[in-house]
Length: 484
Image (cartoon, rainbow, N blue to C red; front, side):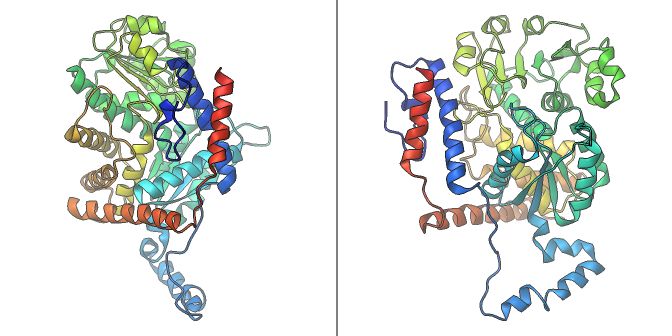
């Protein structure tokens, strides 16, 4: 086993040689969780606020605050749209959650979502050059029941401070009403990353996986395990991109979605699921294992694994089977096990395995594109454009079964994606500003370079400390001991 590097680039080589692939996979999960806790405690979170304007002398306080700032207030009063120019609103996103569906951990209480929401803000700043703030809210009524209307009211009240809203980790079915209502009633983009973001990046991965498998999206048979916000939106986006709904079958905890599911039909809150019940699974397949037989693609966003998806199911799939096992923090089946069962391409939501199909390569560029043209919403076509942008970027630099989508390390993918989304927003008629693709690309690239260079500068000058090596060593020791 190698000595652990500070950049964590050798995660697969730091465990004892006697460890099996399953033990390594489990140990990595334990290591990353423990290291996350100790380093979050070391830094006191991941984000902070710093000025973007200078203080060149005492009287500059009178420019940035009173009496000078009065001119800013009255100017915005007379024309609200210039708030995007005279404040940070035009490059600021609120990451809003009631923390009722945090990763695979369920309801974590409002404050329990802060780690994820700060993480979203961190990625937006570093990858997309976008400022963001975490806003975790309590959506429960006096009886402890989560009320979607409370989130809707909150966002509508605070939208005037932001250029876009990123909804996150809101449980089903509340997430449907919250997103659909706010998309129509807000004057800024409202984006549900668990649903739209995951769908966008999954579609990007599917596009390239099908190219490698030499199959067409309109022909393939796809089985979905899990019918929450993510998988229902993935299915809807695949259909919008050319997939045949009759070749799709979705499964929730009660079985297959189809037109006989009266429980879904009678609960009006699940209207998005009922739409899919009516258009997919015409043969009314009830068991997921049956849907896997001769399926070309398996997309799972359900219960964290690693034994949720059985190898014997994958063995019954069609030739060159594609498996996206994307539950967090542990996939429904580990990639090595899916490969052993015959899968041609395997993707997960994690960056420590090949083919990370995760919304982290989607939302920074998508929201940056929307912000640059001051879009009023993110249309479905903008999301599909982002998917093809990601797929095309990866194909241009080369794809293979272990590398079907870009990674967060490929810095230029984000300005390309942002520019493609910005132009689509203009085409869709939801942009307040117009610009050329090159102007959008250069603007996004400049802002992203600024964020990355600023982070490097403050790290190099010691304003961001390097975590003590002992934190890494202790997390590794816990992981090895837990798995042995």
